[in-house]
Length: 231
Image 1: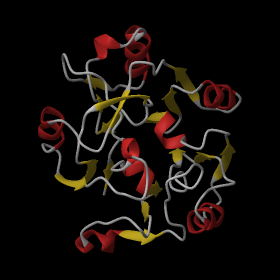
Image 2 (image 1 turned 180 degrees about the vertical axis):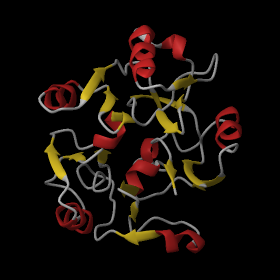
Image 3 (image 1 turned 120 degrees about the vertical axis):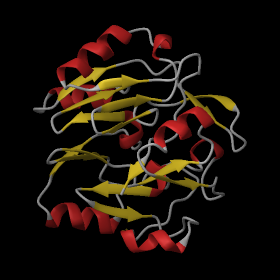
Image 4 (image 1 turned 90 degrees about the horizontal axis):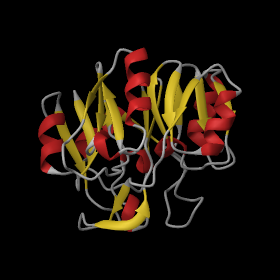
């Protein structure tokens, strides 16, 4: 298993993930602003088992065999930085489709996946997928939209989730729950200390419902690294 991560991830978190496979670290890129400059969910989209990669990401050519190039490059200014920030839950694909990369959008249509339109362009950042029919989000608009679907959705706060500058120091910008979490096997990984969440009990109840074990990192602030990508 290969796991694509933000290079700025802390050592404790890297050591834990490395138990599951080889880590591939994205260096901060100059094409987008510092806080998201090494986030997997900015430069990659995984739809079913197909991975799409932004053509302007600087990454070792060894891994290009596993990916298809998207059509659109990622750029600094919103919404030019959200082309690949797409979330899939079961047969549902969630994004602001006005800005989805053209190659990915064609793939979604060809596979006849169900598109759920949201105004939040950072869809993958904002959603933590917990099963083929459930998720957690820190975005009220996404929450309201998904409540009208068949997806079981939990709303959690994001005020204490931090983004990092290019050197790995926290900034004043809030991150999102999707970018601060990820699932491997039956492990729900939170990048930081779950005791810092106001509504940890709600999180635990949701995870119990979907047979997921919470893995967190005591005494660490919760950080948004853009999640991680497995292939």
